[in-house]
Amino acid sequence: MTPLDTLLALAAVTLLLTLVCGRQTWCGILSTLLYGVQLLALFYMSAVVQADATVTSSVTLAVLDIEMHWEMTALSWYFALMTVTAGLLCSAYASGEWGRRHAQDGNSLRLLHVSLALNVACMLLLLVSADLLALFIGWELMSWASLLLMIQGGERAVKAALRYLPYAMAGAMALLGAIALVHAHTGSLGFDSLRMHVAGMDGGQLWILCGLFLAGFGVKLALVPFHLWQPPAYSEAPGAGAVFLAAISSRMGLFAMALVLVKLVGLERMAAATAFGGLFNAQDIVMLLAAATVIIGAYVALRQDDARLLLAWSGISQGGFMVLGLFSGAPLAAAGGLLHAFSYFSYEAGLFMVVFAVIHRTGTADMNQLGGLVTRMPLSFLVLLIGIIGLAGLPPINGFVSKWMIYRGLLDAGHVLYFLVAVIGTLGSVLYCYKLIHNIFLGQLRLEHQAVREAPWSMTVPMLLLAGVMFVSGYLPGIVLDWVAPALSYLGMVPPDYSLGAIYTDGADLNMLWLVTFMLVGFGIGAVIFYSGGKAQRVHQLDNYAGGHFLTADTRYQFSYNFYPALQRLIGPLYRDSFQWLESGLLSAMNFLSAGAQGIYRSVHPSIYLLVAVVLTLLAWGVH
View 1 (tube, one colour):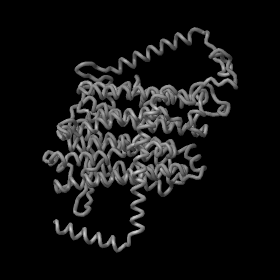
View 2: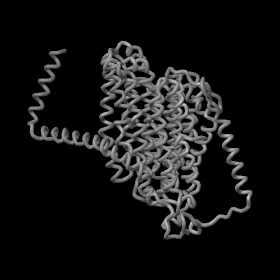
View 3: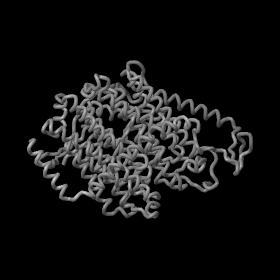
View 4: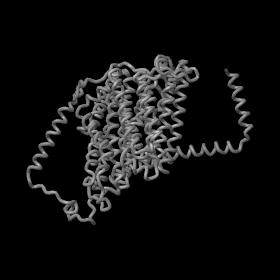
């Protein structure tokens, strides 16, 4: 067995264990340990893949005389690291009090652990695909495994998950069409065949190929306009499942786009596929969709009162940042796009865990019904504070580094307009991040939450570990860039110059070691001055004075309802008149086609279908 075979076998063993003993309370702990062993197996392969080599599997499988192969590359290793780590942390999160509550509410703890293990195994199978057929099968297995996680949150979750089905099926058909086009042109489904023959495709074929791949992968990434299914499907999933889906599941779309469109088709070939007299090309289309995703995701997130929906819409926007960097053609921005996938994984998982910890203690994610929880859940507040700093792209957390690389790379490549889009998107993220922390943790504690306690350790430990990852990878970005650089080299781009704590460019450098140290020293001096004065006095929040009067239980000192009303008046009509109109139009068209198809099916005699099938077959035979 090769090391890759060992990793896949460990994933299968984890799945088998959860199937056999998923009802037992200790199953979550044991599966967490097995995810840890999978991580060790990944790091055992790290030296090989970071040296621009691959680890192949000894297993091959033939389907219709087409052999499928699997191999671990630097790119797949990078995404596999995040996938297995997400599985480990979500398993640990569900192994204690949250899991027991989930089971007491009538849900199946076994099904949760099985679907989590199935998602990890299917994603690993997708990530190590070495040909288009293996990629397609891994993609479909991963899509159905995701659906299994989505449907476990009750009736609303099932309804949201069913909304995902037509998107997933349409994406699968688009992907299958692209693979069929490749096979028709090359006679093979190997990655090398696609890479060699794509240069010989004419403009029309290349446009169709890129469009089909973009649609197939864009559904999972929730790239505009394929995004409407994701927020309700992810937010209604059960806690640990929602964390996994939001943190890593949708990033499989980014991996597939990087592998197929950037590595195999190539950005230069996409840029050469022009239309309308050279007005735009295939690369421009991807960049425009990414820009729309950044803006729409960010400003729709502002409208949400449910913290889960806010984070889900935020995830759509952050995916746009990654695609902007990756398809910009600038190595620094591409490295930032890949690094941002890691930054996003760490803070999105942490933020979702905090939100579900709040739901666990208060029973609601409605930010209009929360407030003041910093006095009852200080550790959760700390994790959310660190997470929103990273999400907003501010120092000293990792999101600042990855976004800075995207900004700088876009400017270096001359993409000034896309740079402005990224800045506007970041402004939106700052606004909804403040709404998230203000409406949940700041202000006055509600009377019904006076007895709320901090989340149990089984939930806070994974959250605190993620907070540590956010800070350390922001303070010392070279740790993660050691993983990003080989992945970027695999895509055919030159990695940027960097050290443990700094990134070097021709125009300006970013030294996080000095920046964060300076910030920590400044905060330390401020803390010493504040606490050494001896005049500070801690008072109860209802024994206080603000806003011109004393605060009592009947004086609400936190206003969260209809947050940002002036901004909502500006962007609300645009959202209603454009995006909701477009969505309702698409749904009406689909309902009309569906009703028409049902009418034909019910009214036409079955013999007519047989006659049509025979005629079409004879026509096809005659053309052949």
